[in-house]
Amino acid sequence: MQDEQQNAAAKATASPPERPLVVAIDGPAGAGKSTVARGLAAALGLRFLDTGAMYRAITLLAIEAGIAPSDGAALTALTESLELDFDQDGRVVVAQRCLEPAIRRGDVTGHVSEVSAHPGVRAAVVARQQEFGRRWDGLVAEGRDTTTVVFPDASHRFYLDASPAERARRRALELGVPEEVARIQAEIELRDGKDSGRKHSPLVHGAGVELVQTDGLEAGGVIEALLELVRGGGVEP
Ligand code: DC
Image 1 (cartoon, rainbow, N blue to C red):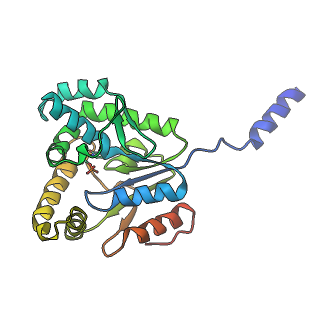
Image 2 (tube, rainbow, N blue to C red):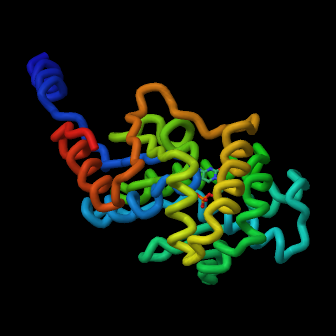
Image 3 (cartoon, protein in one colour):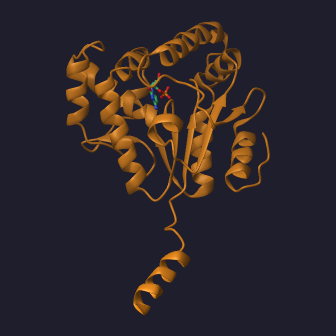
């Protein structure tokens, strides 16, 4: 009896096991998610999970295998057969082959929205991402559905946004082609439409996800603002 009482008392006072820190960041192409998520992960001493790189990796390997981006069954089988992983520098790796920078090629970018729209592909990729969430000791994830589908219970969830013109300006500078900003803006708007309009896990600003508008802000300023929010300072960017 006394033992039971002692056990009950111990249960009542034991603090719950501490959960690893998971920060999820979503938003449209070119909102600066990747730079910000990498910087935040470094500042917090956490690993960085680039979820888009996983869809890009599947797209690259499908192109190499001659699988059409419309062939959902073949793409699902391909995805399920892969051991997608990341090296310590956050670069996507399959069978010890680092797929950076090939996954950033124009043909991969052109097909990745269609490839990532297949539900079988998404289910396998999301399961793998959640496995990283359990295996790694905390992480910062960025993508399109990390706040809503992959880690809806994340410690912190942010939606990073910027106007299409601002996102195109940044991308054009990054690529070293400032004169091509109009073409890049058209590409960004096309990809936004595909990512937001698809049936499965469309890009949405989920309920309860903190909106961070980054027009006119440098990446460093956004990282500082998110750090404040994660550490409980509550300062708006
Ligand atoms: O972030 P990115 O540009 O590397 O993403 C490439 C594509 O992958 C993007 O057009 C949509 C898709 N994607 C997705 O569907 N879900 C994610 N969590 C991340 C990316």
